[in-house]
Each structure stands twice: as C-alpha cells, then as structure tokens.
Amino acid sequence: MRAGSAAAAFVIIAGLALLVAGDALSDEKRVTGSSHDLAAPGNSVCASCHVPWAPDSERLWELRVDDEGPLTGFRRLCFSCHDGTVADLGIHAFDATLPEHFSQPGLRGQDCDRCHDPHREGFGQYIKLPGAANFCQNCHATAGPIQHPTDVEVVPLVDAAGSRLWNLEGTGPGSYIKCLTCHSPNRAVLESGAAGIGLLPLERRPPLCLACHLGSPGD
Amino acid sequence: LGYRTPLPRGSFVDPPRRQGVPAPAAILFASLLGVLALLLAGLLGGIRYQALWDNGRAGEAPVQSAAEFLGGLAQPVNDEWVLPAAVVRLGGSTFVLDTGNRRVLALDEDGFATTIFEDFAAGPPWAVAMTTDGDRLLVAAADEVLVISPAGDLEKNLRVRAGTAAGRPPRLVGIAADAGGRIIVSDAENHRVLVLDGDGNLLSGVGMGMRADGRDGFNSPGAVAVDGAGDIFVADVLNGRIVKLSAQGEFLREFGELGVTEGTLSRTKGLAVDSRGRIHASDGLQVGLSVFAGDGTYLRLVQSPFFESPAGVWLEDDKLYVIDRFAGLIILRLP
Image (cartoon, rainbow over all chains, first blue to last red; front, side, top):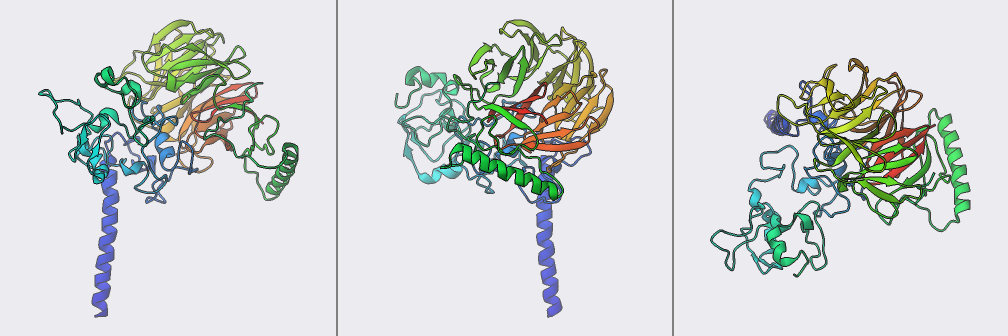
C-alpha cells in the first residue's frame, strides 16, 4: 500500500514538473522567431529578459523596482527596449505625462501583463487573449450596458478593433461603437467630464468625429 | 553653472526631502553621517559608489562618493520636454533633444529653453553629437543625419541610404564624429555601425544586417563614442557588451557582459569616453552609470536617487551631462 502511495505521489509530482517544464518550454518556443526574440543566434531567447537562476520571476532584469513614478512594476523592463532605441517609438513607449490603464505595479497578472503577454505574439500586439476586436469586453462587459456620452449604447458585442465607426449602410440606434476609435488603454488623455475614461490624444481622434464634436467633452 | 532649478514641479522626480529641520543643521548632520558612513564602509573593505543627494541643490549633497552633483533641471523653466533622449554641449551652450516633441532645445544658464529646430519629418531625433570642428550639431533621426547650426539653421540633411538585403531602412540611434570629419552612426534596425564621410556617403560598415555577436556582429547597437585616439566604442545593447573598434572599423576589444548585477551591462543607453580613457555607460535598467577603465576593467556604478532612466551622456572636461528620459538633465563632476 505504501509503495502504491509513493508511486502515485511520484507520478503526480513528476506530472506537475513536466507540466511546469512544458509550459516554460512553450514560452520559449512561442518567443522564438517572434519580435521578442531578441537574442543573437545561438543564444537563449529567454536570457534577454530572464536570468537563468530564477526562471519563474517576471522582472528578473530590474535592479530597482519602483512603487511609484513613471516606471513602476514591470514597466522598467518593458521600457528598457520600448524606449525608442531597441524598439521603434512607433510601438507603445511610456509617456509619463499621459495616463495609462489602471494597473497594480509588480503584481503578476495585474501590471502590463493584465492585457499583454510578452511570450505570445499571435493575437497581435502581444494581447493575452484571442478575439482582438472584443478584447476590452473581457473585463468591461461585466459592467453591463452603459450610456455612452455620444448617445451610442455600448452593447455586449463591442468591436474594439479600431476600424471605422460607421457602417456603409448607415448606423441606426443600438448599433455598436468601436472602443479604440476614441479610447486608448495606453497614453490616453483624461479630460474633465470623462473621469477615468482614457481618450485618445486629440491629434489621434478621428477627424470625422472632430468635424462635429470639436474635440471637447460634451460637444 | 546654472541649472540649479530644484528638480521637481511636484512631479515624480522629486528627490526625497527632510522635513522640519533647518537646512544648515541638516546639511551638517548629514555630512557628519556621510563621513562616518564612508569611514565605516572603507573599514569594512569597500565603498559602495552611490551618490546620496537629498535636495538637488549644488554644493549641498551630504555624501558624494563617486561623482559630485553639480546641478539638475527636471524641466526647462519656461517649457516642458517629453522623454528627452540626448544632450550635447557646444560653444558653451547646452542642447537637448526633446524626442517626444521632435525638436532641439537650447538651454541658457538659467534653465530657459529655446526651440532651435523642429523639422524632423522623417522621425523623432534620437542622438546628437558635435561636428569635428565643434561648430555644429549632428543629429540622428530615423534614417537621416542632420547638420544644424547652434542657431537652428539646417545646413545639411544627409539621408543614409545604406539599406540591407532585407530592405529595411536604417534607424539611427547613435552618432559620433571623429577627428577626421567622419560620422559614425549606429543602425539599430539592421544591427550595424556605419562610418560615413562628411556628406553622408558610406565609407564602411560593421555588422551582419541581422542580430549577431562575435567580432563581426551586433545585436541592437545603440550609443557610439570616439576616444582621443580615434577608436570607436559601440554599445552593443542586447549582447550586453561594449565593443571597441579601430578608426577603420576593425574589432579591437569587447568588454562587459549581459547581466543584472553591478559590473554587468543590462541596457546601455549612453556612452562617453573621458580624457583618461574611462568609459561611462548609462544603463536604463541598472538606473545608473557603469564606469570602465580603458582596458575594459569595471570600476564602479554611479547611481542617484534622481535617476529614473538615464540615457544620453555628454562629457565636457570633467563634467558629465546626463539626460534622463523622465528626470531631465543631471550634471555630475567626475572624480
């Protein structure tokens, strides 16, 4: 009986170990060949962000982890490339003068990794989950329909792709709006009357909207 | 020297301040503590080279173990820069690349800024150096090298056309000039270092057009600097090393290693070589400046509570000008 229990425990532990190892291996495979594959040929793709003696840590490259300031939590590691030098500035770079989507710095799953997984490029912009157009809905749909300032109802099937706002055949009452047309989780602008809602900077808002709305809240 | 505006504006770069103690008494107390700390550290076998500044004002830093703080400027007095990336001194004036706003600012001694150039159509400016004659600015932006007078007149626009087999246009993020009038640029997009003549013609290049290491390769080369002998230093950022090339582009030496601890290189952002041949490398992840002897021996890490993300550096005599992407301009005196 004891031998059976020991064997069962061994199998379980070995299985868990294989699962953990398999997941790490998957991450390495996923990164290989992606735009986050930063290593010169022959070098570990993991070593650009992780040091080998602590592979489970998320921010192994940061000697200084800040609780406040522009580079809190994981951001220092992200910014070390996404500062316009290693990665082009066209890819999101942190601008401390503009607000970001709420996060809890340094907490796994609640920092930048709330939406992004640097190991998975397949969903576009390293978004964690598939269904890019409706990604925001993964969290925000739970709030239920709300009344949008432009009098467009935000319905459960929000299309956040950032493609055009209108339909060629016309947009009637109840039609949905696309989140990224006006909002931005990164480098957003908070304006009076829009507390907590990150809007695109004025220059990035659609000219079609601005033709009527003048870029001011409530216009 | 100027630039003694206390770093701040109620922003995140406020240095820690003591409250409720008269400044002279606090300074005296802190100085005594600093001396005791230095003595104790020395007795214990090593001083940790960390500058501890408590108020940001020149001459009042209680402990200065590695570099004396001379002044700082979180933002210009009359303007705001966004994510500045590089700094250069020319003709006694300080010029800063306001990368976020795509412009070049000239700072006067009181910290007031004047925009001298903002026509960066190809992309934001990333690196700046001084021409060999010391009269003009060399600014790297996207695939262009712009020669700009201190007054802001565009004298040359040199488009670097040396693409690669992959067809990617250069993305220049480092620049320097040597005594012969040649311009050295790093191309992060194609992992190369290019040597150009004064008209932007390609003279030679080092790199394989793809991520690589060894004697012939770079992996995201960044800042470049030239020493008094004409040798070229390149921050090979993602290989975690600094590569020394001859003026002809031949591999001479490499030093540093990729790592996260003091003495290694994490993400080198700026490079400068002083008159003693020491190499000062700013590091965005280690949030400090690693200093190496000319032979590559690691000397020390200079840190500061002011640093958030140190980037471009410029040396003038014994003064090191550091531009920090978030904290602004910080000026140190080298030991």
